[in-house]
Amino acid sequence: MTLRLSILFIGILFLSSCEEMFDSGEIITSDYEPELNVYGFISFDNLKPSFVYVHRTLSLDENPNDYSPYFVNDAEVFIIDSLGNSNPFQLNENSSNETYEEPDGFVPQFDAYYTLEVAAQNGMSITGTLHTPPEPILLVDQIPEIIYPDSLFTLKWNTVSDAIAHIKVVSANHSGCYINRTAYFENGETEWTTKIFSCAVEGINNPDNLSIQLTFMDINYYDYFVAYDDDNFLNFIMGISGSTQDAFGVEGGLGVFGSYATDIVILPFDP
Image (cartoon, rainbow, N blue to C red; front, side, top):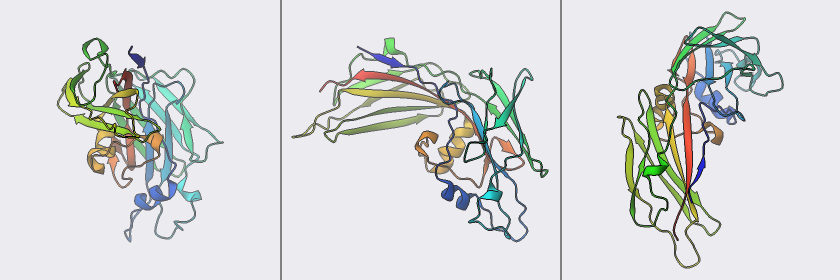
């Protein structure tokens, strides 16, 4: 039986590796003026609301070991939809990373344009633009009900436009078998034929199921976290950052305003 988990993420942000981000986000030039470093994301997952982190880079005369100047807690943050509706994001004063959280009633849409506006009290400002990807849908009626080891199978999904598709087959078990097969599709492809090799040997069994994960990501997210970062798909949940010295989808500072959405289907893996 096929088990479908509709887990739709768009832009789930992390900042668990602060020291790494401080180091990579600092620009060392003699006349460098600090600027905002923003991480803005939109989420369709009710358990992980949309939010924006607002930080700034440090000047040469500021202590890089003193993190307090890095955080910006006095900014005005808005995400504006294509109809001109302005959604004010408010600072969560209990957060450790200066997190600005979505207001009640904020309902983002797939395949839609959004604008990010951030203005700090010190005069720094930054803007961003984003086109969210379409909703990813694995076509369960056109893919196998059971995946067999060492046998080719084809995964199919809905048409994607103005976004990048990423497909991942992953599983593991306590006996030591780990499966992780992944591919990116940049040109509108809607299917992938692949094979999962058996890892069953004496004392190690194949897992019972495979997690099939289809992700559509916007170009900002792809450029920042994949293409620019050695083709590794970096999920914010895992606490891994991309480069903080560049801007993707934002103007007037550094960072990224990006998005992605994921659909997951669990399929039996015949032992």
